[in-house]
Length: 55
Image (cartoon, rainbow, N blue to C red; front, side, top):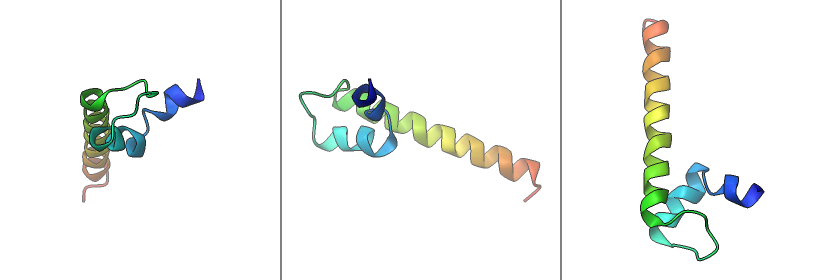
């Protein structure tokens, strides 16, 4: 269970794009997609916080 969840962290998902692993639950394309979702979530959170704090 921990290995599968670990694949979805940003560093692991991004690494799978360059170095696909056989025992990973994600492929290179899926790893890139997960990495893009992390980036999008971070950008939305930053935008919400900036709007809320009137920066």
